[in-house]
Image 1 (cartoon, rainbow, N blue to C red):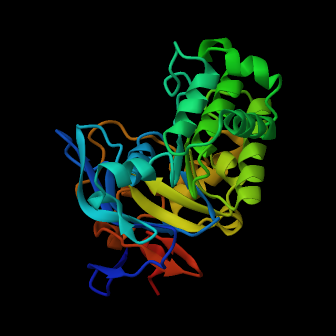
Image 2: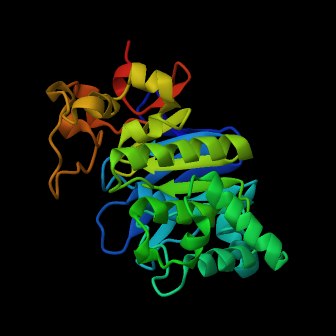
Length: 331
């Protein structure tokens, strides 16, 4: 469901279209925090759709992806809303169905390639364990499937890499192993959380090619998370922009880049090439305590703020996009 502002500035709900994944009014709170990390987030991902999730550090992107497959730390909990995968409430799943969802129906590539792999087990054993957790095939077929998938990612000298330990591989090679681990059981949806962080530009481009080619060839849906709008625009047909835990814009990537509607999206687009933000979009990062308790969360940084912004805007449909900004609903 999507929240929209009524004529009186109150939030009302509209239905999201049915998809492979549906997120409805999801709110996540960390213990001891004054404000939610994820605020009333609603969106959907269709079969085979490639969606980018972009926003600066601390905007709630990672928390959201963890909530999608119930991997939140004990210090966080979902306080409202729901996540549906193929119409089934993920929050209602018990042990075995939840295990099948994680790594079976949904594959996940974490941020840190070293933390995502066991340092004392060879790459080959870890990939075999991931496969055996969900499927039973012969040893020969098992090895063939792992080898073929690694080769499809342009992994050189696969046999040697399978005998290697994670620390013996480069960052780009470890990321390819994590992607293989996430894809080995042929999921319907891949969650990739900052998969190119700390990689040089050449390796980053190679990995983005891998994501684009594999998702197209396998008909795989993708949620690609990044703080860099260049990364998601290279792969994703649709982009969702998050700011301070809530969605502020959602639409076709090409249209969003060509004419951002929300001032924060505009700041991200301005930063694409120069890595600096046009001052008219408000480049100042907030310090602790700057988050407003009422009104538009982007208000303190926004150069277009006016009287209506003292109320909290809902997500409005504007030309096939959704945007959380009053200036698009004012005559």
